[in-house]
Image (tube, rainbow, N blue to C red):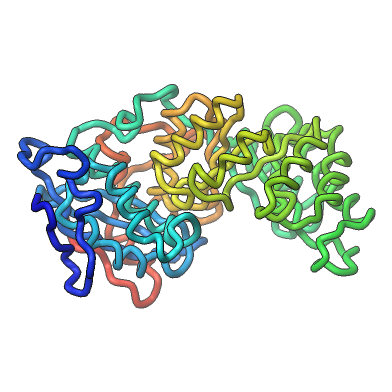
Length: 413
């Protein structure tokens, strides 16, 4: 590697000097797996129940790593801009390349938002490529595994989510017919009693409506399944406290995101005022730095990072390690395709404090068609494959069939 090698973007004004191999103490004389270099980065967007941004990192050894960035618009363009920063580099240097991308994109806000989720997609693809190069599963790159399979919780959506009995019927169906023993339902649904939803205040009848949903669902599943309830950052602190107290007598696995995500001091107060209702937060917080206050001040009972959004696989493991210091379990938020879901499962296998990984596509009939492997989720469990890398192979025909209009299919390996 040249000490001041120019990036392959002809318009770039900076070089790799700040985080080049030499300045990081690495030898420029490479052999074996270290001869492999990144040659290209490509993206395409699949039109799933969310827009799934798939990322592929190509190498001169013919090995391709596949990752996924958090859903939505903008990430693909950001990834295109970042590609020159890692072309020519070793895909084995995952941490160094991750930090390099964070530094190079700092002017565009790489501590959070679309930039860090775009970096996450590349980082997952690097784990897939590195695992294939070294012929080990991705979990081995993270230090090995605690479990062979990961518990999956099903994010459920009833026909009429405002009706308690509609939610109860769907809960019973998902448990009886699909075999899940962990579920989640939404509580930020219209009750018919709202006066002004913009002020986030819950009146008594609104709280009772949410209690009715909790009661209907938990009663019908009994001890056959754990059930969580999501609020999507919808309520005031006072309303969140009253809601948590109102459902305290029911067997609630956790109450998720009851207040807006910005003020962690208020989050701590809400959590610590609800001693019998576990509070879960984390999908809207970025990197280990963003999660630190929540963990250190014990402002949450369960942490819920979203791996393709928070910073990728290693960053999620670092967050989980920090949470484990405070004996806080991790239940990963996940709305991904099979790629992001399996990346989350790989990390969940490699950390001691994993509760479960979310699955959000149980009503989408072709979710599993995107990969060549079958039966990814069985009886609410996802087996962690022993194949190198993430352990999944994209079905490019299915990807092409379900691409967002105007997208271009990946090149073949």
